[in-house]
Image (tube, rainbow, N blue to C red; front, side):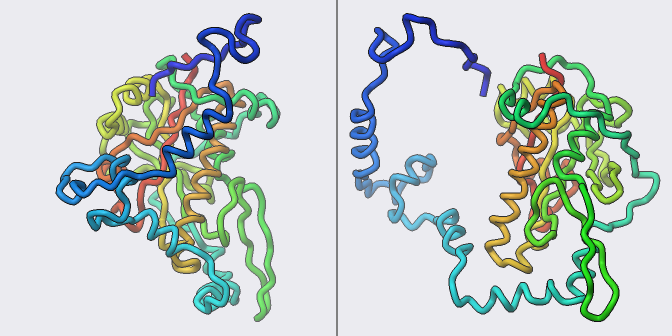
Length: 327
């Protein structure tokens, strides 16, 4: 979406209610129109013969035509229900000694040394939390200038890095060390990873990388597709235009079964919540560093999966954030 909205303060003539063209409808009028719009639904029998259905048409004709209702089915399937024995049966093993050891080893995946890129120390964040939150905006204008690797490293560590460790005693003796993260993660399972597509980042090649939070390094992708190929996966011309001037695109990649093995369908909720927490941390870190960032929801999933070298099911694209130097 282009930047059509600019922050401004109301002049004296514009303040108050009922000033010329700036007059707003009364709250009663708004509520009445919403009640009418949401309280009535036109029966459209022709929808059963309609091959092309917009999202709005699908919503207006739920229950007609036999179309799948995947979103509603997900909401129903992921509900917590009292007395569901599968919850205790599925979560109990994770609190055994074997389960705790397994959780402590999550993301301990070795990578060949020739694909590892070390990250410099993080930079100090230039704003306290309350200032960064107040100043955060969706920035879509970028200067087409490179990001420093230290800036990227700071954003990644702030977004989803390891901030401490917790030692847990085992029933059979000994203990395990569990990492603590800047973003909350259900059961410590870390089903969301951050991949980096560097468009303009000093010292990084034009390929995809995965952030290894355990080693605090970037791991170069096994596939050799150009990171700038992300522009071709974008179906929105305005998004593609401002992405072309950005420094990097952060891709949240989910591993659904890492959390669904324990929490069932509800684990998908936890995965999406974690992706949101990581995203917000990334935005606040970018703002505190004086950089701009914006979310992007217009990338074609399958094309992006190919670019990243993931299968789209066991590892799947969840969300994206564009980061760059403010224009």
